[in-house]
Length: 252
Image 1 (cartoon, rainbow, N blue to C red):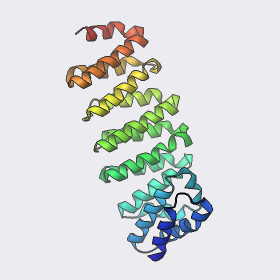
Image 2 (cartoon, one colour; image 1 turned 90 degrees about the vertical axis):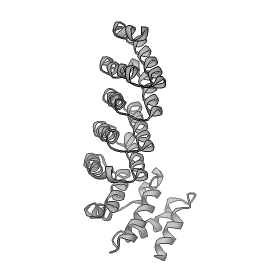
Image 3 (cartoon, one colour; image 1 turned 135 degrees about the vertical axis):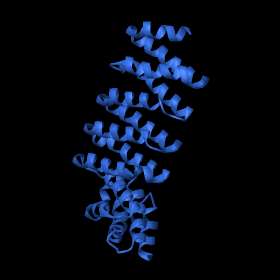
Image 4 (tube, one colour; image 1 turned 135 degrees about the horizontal axis):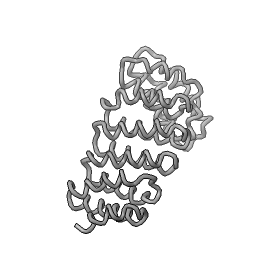
């Protein structure tokens, strides 16, 4: 236990170079093979926090001990193991890991859900060819139970996917447009509307999204209706074919 605390304390010194942190991370990895869940979980928490800094990811030299925890009956252990594996993942393992996360993310704490989204966000630049898997996972998050912080983080992560990966733009924007049909947070509604307005000229098939936005002008409160009308106006400006469809809405 003393060794674990010493390693944890050493890892908290953000100014130390990797070579001075490496022995502590190696010791933490050793604790993953200990018989008790308490030490394993404590070590996983520290490792997960350390490699949240991308420059520290190279400190994980052997992932077999972490992968072994995926079979644990203890959900907390397997959840933290997946969060770490996502941060250090190779392209061919991304879909499998995201599918595993989907199995239990609904039962996880809000803090852990947000941490998982942070791990997913790190995949956007690392594995852009996996954009469909990323969008599908984020769509699952938006449909799942969750509080404001989780939903906002999922929307922000999906926005990042759209901005970083042009091929993901259409499917990502439509996913967000579908989400606002059931979103209960006004500020997230407006966040999505602003993004749709910003991306209006880049949407290949805007009619589908325009119909979803139109529903918000009929069913929501004044603030969201105003954002929806502004977004529709932007669509009409950038997509002349939609003018006849949108003009009657704006005239109401």
